[in-house]
Length: 385
View 1: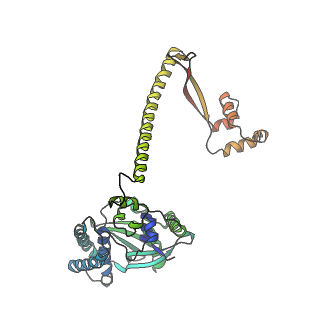
View 2: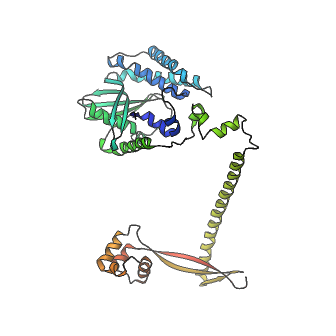
View 3: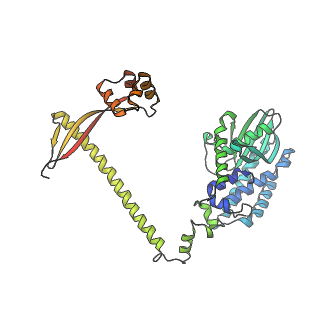
C-alpha cells in the first residue's frame, strides 16, 4: 500500500467508501477545493524564485493563480454556480499573500512544496507535505497556508496533527535544527499564528494518526458517509447510501407506491411517537419528584408516616444508603488483611453495607464508604380497589 498523505487521511475520514473505491488522480472537485489548490500551487510555483531572494509581484502571482485554476478546471464540478465567487476569493488570498510574502522572504527560505516520509508508531508512515520551510539559526519555521474562512483558536491549532508530523520531520531531517516553530498563515485575513513545538507533547497526536492509518489498512467493508461532497462524487450512481433517493428523484420509483418509502415513513412516525412519550415521561417524572418533595415535607411536619389517599396509601421513609468506591481494590485488600475475605470466600457487599449502617463494620472499611440520606415514598394500594 502506498504511503498516504494527510489529505488522503482527511478524504478517508470524510467518506471511507469513496476513498477506497474511487481514484484520487482524476476525481472531481468543488469550487472551494479548486480555489484552495490553485492558490497553494501558485504559491508553491514561486517557491524556487523566492528562495533565491526574488520579491514576487501581484501580477505574476495573479497569473500563476489563473494558470493553476485553468489547469484544474477540467476536474471542476460546480452544480451551485459558485466558481466566480471562489475565483474572487482566491484573488483575495493571493493579494493577502503578497502582503506577507516579501517580509518573510527576509528569512532564509530553504524549501517550498516539500515532500518526505515520516515514520509513526505501530509501523505506520505518513507522507509529509510541507508548504514552506525557513531557517533562522538553529530554528526551523514550518509553514502551512490556509484559505478557509473559519476561525480557529490557538489552542485548537496547537492540536493540529499534520503540523505535529511536519515538525517532527523537520527536526530530524534539516541539519543544524534543534527547535521548530510551526506557522499557520491565514490567507483570508493575512494573519499568522505561530507555535513553538514541544515534541514531548505531540506523542498522542502521532499515536492517533497511526491508529487511523492502521484502520485504513485493515478495512474490508468501507461504509459511505453522506457529506456535501456527495453532490459531485463520481461514485454516487453506485453508492448504496444514495441509489434509492436518486431513483426516486428521477421518477424511476414512485413515492406513492414504493415499499421503502412506506416503511421509512412508518418508522419515522413511530420514532416520533416514542420520542414524544419519552418527553412526556420526563415531564411527568419531574412533576412526581416535586410532589414527592412536598409529600415528604407534609409527612415530616405532621408526623404522619403513612398518608392516605382515596385509593392508595403512601408510606414515607427516611433511609440511609451506603455506596462503596467503584474501584474495590482497597476494600478487598483490607478484607484479606483482617481475614474476613478468606472466611466468606467472596465479598458480601450487601452485608458490608448493613454493617456500616449498624456501626459494626471494620472502621477502615467504614472510612471507604460514603453514607447519604435517602427519602423514599412507597405507594400501597388499599384493599377494595
